[in-house]
Amino acid sequence: MIHLLDLWTTQQVPLASKLTNTMDHYFHDHTFFEIFYMVEGSISHTLNGVTETLTTGDIYFLKPDDAHFFSREESNKDFHRDIILQKDFFKEVCQFISPDLYENFINNKYKKRISLTINELNHFEELLNDINALPLSRTDLILASAKAVAVQLLTKLLLCQHLESISYPAWFQDLLLRLNNVDLIKAGLGEILAPFYYSKEYICRSFKRHMNMTLTDYLNDQRLTIAAHSLTYSKNSILSICTDIGFSSVSYFNKIFKQKYSCTPLEFRKKQLNF
Image (cartoon, rainbow, N blue to C red):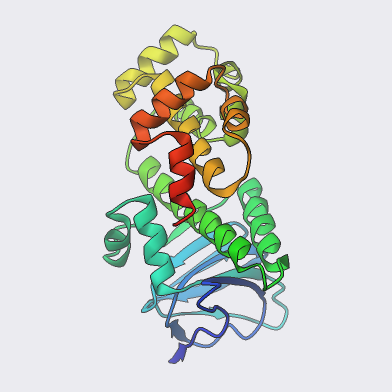
């Protein structure tokens, strides 16, 4: 077995990605964390002795000691995106999301394989291509972008894990997916509920029963998460962020933001500059 060394990242740039369609048939493990997803085609993949056929959108989350290889034939035209993450960087991102995430990941508490929709696949391809297009001298932009994409990938893993652990009605699962769509969250509750035939009152009662919180509180929490991301990774004004995510009152936005993050949006932005 080959023990792959990290030849792609640096101390200033702890995440790197590349498209692969060759030289992946060697049995190997890594000195780094790896996330890879299928961009196009299908291929046989063996991980820790278990062989599966992967197709477009399949994504894997691997620890350094996970050993795998692809069974590639000359006629195979598949591509997969390999994302390399330094150990300390991966741990830092995990701790930013949840204090238990890193230990749970190391102890195999999460699935290694989930699936991306085509829209999600295109989204991550765009983000990673944008990072690769940045000049190496802009390590600040590369690092900020790397943190953003790593957080999104790991959050996707947690979301899939959560949805598979519970049994909601099909329409309610659709509702939760819409409540995690950034564009719909910004558009507001009316747009989120538009496809459903149930009354708003019935949906709100069902939501409280299933989630033990009101639909409004959940939506506001989602909006605040988007706001925190914008405060960290954009230079948009607080007023612009507030209105963009659907709040009409800056004072109300400041109030509930402080309830969640124990600081004002301005204080939060200042803190993230040192993250």
